[in-house]
Length: 437
Image 1 (cartoon, rainbow, N blue to C red):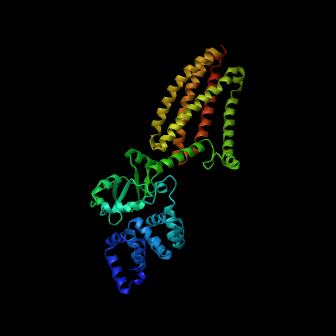
Image 2: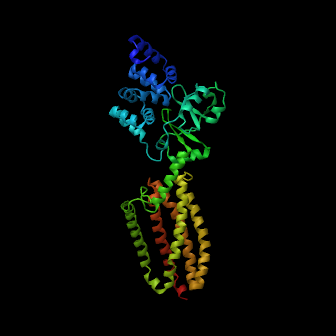
Image 3: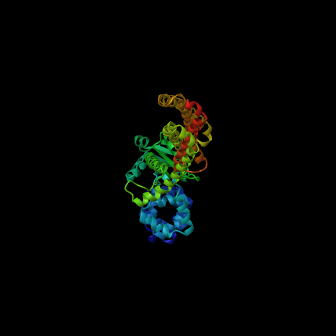
């Protein structure tokens, strides 16, 4: 029976039943084809249709909306919770989505667009809105039949809701296919299953999935509705992309630049950072200039400057890489800065002693005991400073709400060069009588 064939009395009776039994009506409509459901919605008031759509499973509701005239579907969407409306829109084909968005009221469209454009690196930006969910009273046989219609989705767990669409838990696909056909999903589900909010940062999501060894993770809004699903492979891909982008930003190139990008793109992204590097190089040169007389007196000092700079630079880079990884994976927090810095200071000191002993022994045979002592002390001090700086810089930038990948490398290079030269040349100046012997 279609909407055009319904008499006024039949429409009143249908509307009354839907109003009195919205949950049962939603379950019954899910069993019908999208065209039949759309015909029924054509014959009832829009607010009633909206309330029933809100209780239907998202897949069935999205199919019914696609079968409705665009004006009618837009009216129903405009009355829904923005999170749910955005979820149903995301399930439509691109041309259907565009047509519906054009028909939506401006205020509703703005709210839906806001929900749909979650900030980068949040669960909302990474989730798949095409989540397959069932009410707890659904039988195993019916659930499997519905899942056969979604062979394009990679499903590891199915989401279970109550009759009002509130998230209850999940059931694994393995439990589903091995259970008796007439058993309900409510009996199979894991209650209090882990889930996250759309604005949860990706690092927290990765930490949760790795810690609990999850294949997927539901994304639930503050009203308890499931708005998407996070899959492990999607998080791995996103993490891999960000890792390569961080590598590019750390050395002063744009994340948009590729190996075969136009030269103009490469120049535009690299040249500003080269200018910054030039300024820091002049700063390091200015430090060296302060000790011009010492270098003129002892030429061996100038020969050994790159050794100090190179070792302190490598030491700082090691600490920087470990700390940035810890911050990215939420292994450490900015509140643990003191603990991290103490550890890096100790590591820098011990590694400094190990490297300094070998270096000073070589210098002893090259330039005598005085310069060997200077190298021993300078190498230990420079490596401690570099190790602490490598850990401190990303922590400070993170605490200041700045991306540590963008500026950490340049700041670290400046610190290690300036302090490495300052320590080595300063000690050489103070101990110049020993070097002269």
